[in-house]
Image (cartoon, rainbow, N blue to C red):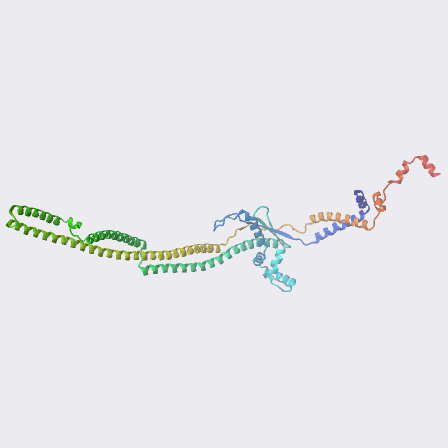
Length: 462
């Protein structure tokens, strides 16, 4: 369809189009004027999701802001907030509300749920763009009621936010209190086991005692080494069997003195025998003196040799005693090491129980404080005021819409009638109907007559 055909149809069907247009505008205008007036009140709240938490000091991640705001919008639209509004305004106690509920549901269901659903249908929650401000708009027939419900919604939203935060905190507080009691019982048990073990083993300061016993063990080990060296020397002396080669005998002053006397006496005896002969009394006196000296020398050598044997026996006994003391000291040190290991295990149990108890106690204190918080991160920025003008119906907007709708419907009605009763209004219509090419077109008969010469007209008349 060409634009010329379009205009010709509008021109031919202008009465129908005008009638439909007038009827549409008049109908919508009349309905708008007769509709009951609705008033909308808006309360503005601010959700502070960027500030750090006052208790934990943790700030919300900026990537989570969108999800947090979406969650807050869902909370605002939730039946829980609507029920809180019903309780705040005491709508469930109103006879009018009860009558409307019974009329609508025949008394079936729960009154507060029905009222909450009714409020939700007239509620509009819109977030401000790129901000944490939420606009809570409620529409009602009464401007006072609309403002009251909008403000009640803001207050109920803040109250529900507090309860959503405090409720889990109270549950966690009770949980941590129970866990704290169990952790304290474990700590007391570990401390009691440690004290009983220390008391049973007489342990006051195990580290100092272990250091002392280790020092004693080292001293005994050194003593045993020294005694073993002396004992080995005494055994070697004793095993030689010759008294004259013993170091103690050879180094003894008295033995050395007696040996010198014997040597001198032997020299005198040899000189006297060569000078006076063996029968001389002086020679006999020297022989008697020499025999006496040799007896003394032999006696002294045997005494020194016997002292070496006695010293060897003493050294062996001392070695055996030190070995026994060393073995007992090793056993004592090993037992102290075992006691220290067991004591360390018990101490670690106490330390572990103490750390667990401290962590649980800290969490219990934090959740206890959170359970007592009565402030939410929601603040009423602008409370709703009583609207002075109705928000619905929008008469001017409806009239403008009716004008546009009337034009569209009128044009549609004209084209529909044209399709049902098709007419030829131009050459293009004729070509479309006959499906034949157009050779010429007579636009106006009067204009055609004016263009024909007069002699041709007279000839045609005759």
